[in-house]
Image 1 (cartoon, rainbow, N blue to C red):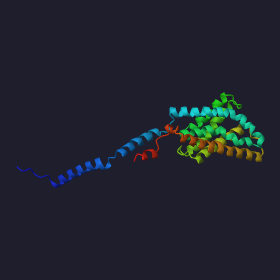
Image 2 (image 1 turned 90 degrees about the vertical axis):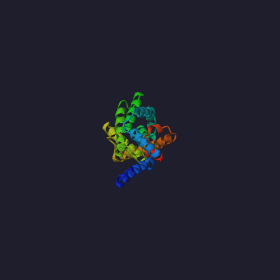
Image 3 (image 1 turned 135 degrees about the vertical axis):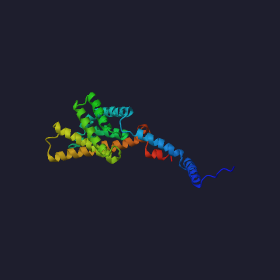
Image 4 (image 1 turned 30 degrees about the vertical axis):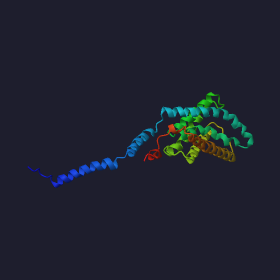
Length: 238
């Protein structure tokens, strides 16, 4: 007895199912594509903006180094005074550098504040001439820098943003200087020189110098383990 030939419609559906399976298994399956998806998932996890223990420890190490620098910067600051009216303000930006430098290295929320507070704490315990008020300066200066990094959603760490963060830290320090009575009796031209020199020095030291120092460190490769996988990294897999 001869078997009935399948209906054309059923045969066509069967053909489509087979063709679909073959098409998906050959054309769309790409090991690099699958690998890219895995790396993207890793990037999403590694790109988590919350601070990890490693981030905190590295930030503390950076802060300790700058805390020592902050302590010895006081005499250096005083040595600049004979060079002109408010000339010492041109090097004031060193006291903001822990926050900007640490953020450009770690690139996560809270790093600028943590680095500045930790550095000022180290400086205070080493016998800073400004005593425990150093901690208040560290907190406010770190917050001033953090605001500008947050304004760019912590995604930009270019020279411009780093300089803005340095300006933010300088502005915070000026507010405290006024509160503590350090600059409440200056004349207009004195205010102009004082504030102008501090902003310029902050941009040069905590902005430009901090940025290029971090870039020099990046070229050594030591910061690679601290960074999330970038889009360029997984695009290289294609």
